[in-house]
Image (cartoon, rainbow, N blue to C red; front, side, top):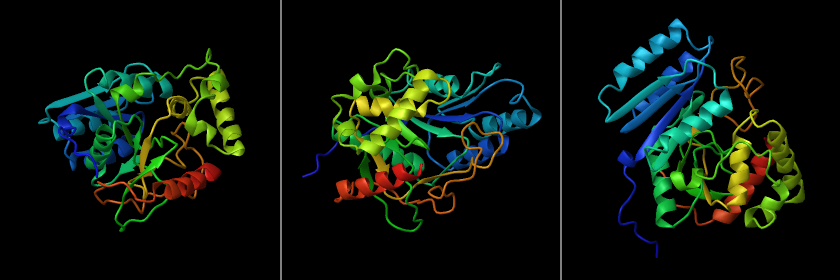
Length: 293
């Protein structure tokens, strides 16, 4: 019998964070998508520097302020200086989690489904009900628009549209320079289940950010997930799509869009249940992604 959650997580406990830099047209799309969702606490953070202090960004800020003027909590922070991708994203996540127990994170190039926000809260409630710690993700490399969706467990915290609790984030650091990576992973159950080829690939990524901590922030989150044996949730069919590829303004998505990414077949279903075939589906999907990313 599935345990009933007596006090479900409310939207009032969740801070929604929208992150951007110098792409006002993408930020406007996200503003419009979030406006169609039920949110109470919205934080928009735009990194600074000359590239983002433009007339177009100023117009976008005015547009967002008008759209969300009636929210319980709305904060728009446009940084004066350029913090860089890693410091901007991780700093703002930590800041929002000083005010709320839970966070939903959306970057400006991540298209979200109609029910993305409510699905993230549903996933957080499954974590709370089952006493689990981990990331609730919106991305899957499997895309079907019109099929009923379900949650699955994943070894990986997919971070194109995601959510977590303060407890899950509290041990995060982007600076792994003084960390003995292999020693930390030694007793991880999820790490020890990986194939040797997968371990080699991830160790290469972890060592890269150990030497260059400001190159990215998400490999460090994967490292934390393994170290803490997070139980991550992801949809079987993706409820987000990434629009950032082939964009010269992007940091990590300048290149051609990978075959497993689409913005056309985002699944809009409400997800409330976990799949009965969690292990089979997760092993297939995660292996598919691992071989292609």
